[in-house]
Amino acid sequence: MFELVAFYLFAFLTIGSFVTTVKTRQPLYALTSLAAGMIFISAFFFMLDADFMGVVQIVVYTGAVLALYAFGMMFFDSSSLIKEKQRPASTVFILGTMIALVIVSMLVAPIAADHFQGAYPPIEGEGNVENIGYILFTKYLVPFELAAVMLLTAMIAGIVLASKHMNLKESE
Amino acid sequence: MIGLSHYLILSVILFLIGMAGVMTRKNLLMLLFSTEIMLNAVNLGFVAISKFHHDLSGQMFSFFIIAIAASEVAVGLGLLIALYKRTGSLDLDSIAKMNG
Picture 1: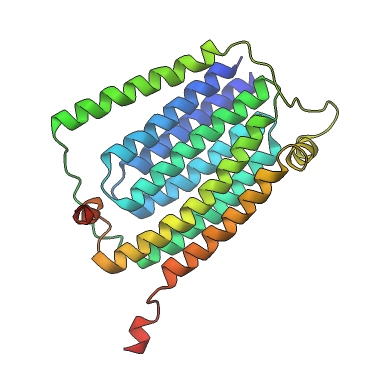
Picture 2: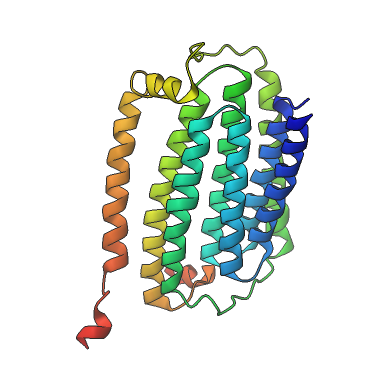
């Protein structure tokens, strides 16, 4: 009963804040409601006994990613509204048909793959964080290291791209 | 009782919201936000499958998706700042002059 109420409450809150993100005209409102939606998503992770993922969701997404967006928005004149134009009807029709086909196959795929055997079941009696640690540093060690290298590359790319001509105003 | 299909349907709804944002908006910042929404929807589906099928691979995939999303934001925002310095606008059509 408690889980039912929590699921529907957070489902409506998440959908509402993400719809606000997509529909609003002001980028600052979009950023704020996106942050709220990320926090609500982490509630689902806690309900699904994935404590580690819930904490990572709050720390990485709401803490790091949205703070990065907030700092990045200082570079833009976000008060200038961009005119949203309508595309021609044939483009909408073709895109809509293709996306409908993709979504139907996405929805049917879990039904077709019903007899599914878990490859790495969690160890009984251990907490979620311990289980994540065991599997991350045994089975997924190489992807973990590759993700670290990728994050380093992305950090360097971000610094180089954003800092180019950063001191143009002062030097002139 | 809440089952796997509840979570998967919620995940599809969130994914569709993000996809509608990508298809309708012209502001490049909004396109990045909508991409984040889609990545989050996929994360939710992975963690739900991980719980109901007793397999930790789903949580691992969602962990790596978060790492990819973080690097996507760093590179995407850097490119966006470079584009804004060049064109002075965040409009998606301002890139369209790049086609030969």
